[in-house]
Length: 167
Image 1 (cartoon, rainbow, N blue to C red):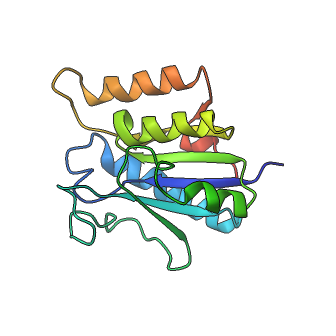
Image 2: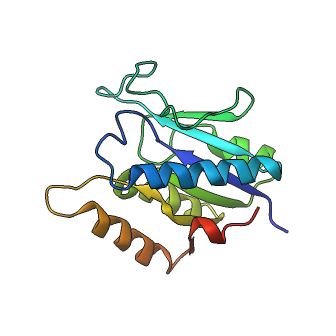
């Protein structure tokens, strides 16, 4: 049996404003959060801040549809990877976590960086294919970005739908 943690990355008001299928993604994340809590699997909330997304502002807050508990781990980051310049790895080590289940936003930035870093750091990583989102870029449709990430990540980690995740 592996020791899992559920990561909910950057599902913040401003980050998901233009994200595709965000209602479905948030519903799937809520389902995973509930399942993780029932099995006493740690839920780790990650929030990004930078010059445009100011820590503590309304735009920076996690969306109202998600409800982090006071005793759940919160990671505050300023880089795309949730591991870079944060204490995420320390928390995972203290909890003896070896498997990460990744959800959130934005697929082509922080989800991509964190999932790849997780593999590089030796974790088993499952990307939840229908629980991450992004917005259209100047050159690509969001749906294509999500599909490409799911497809390429499946070569190095696991890619499962919400309904396939077990804690």
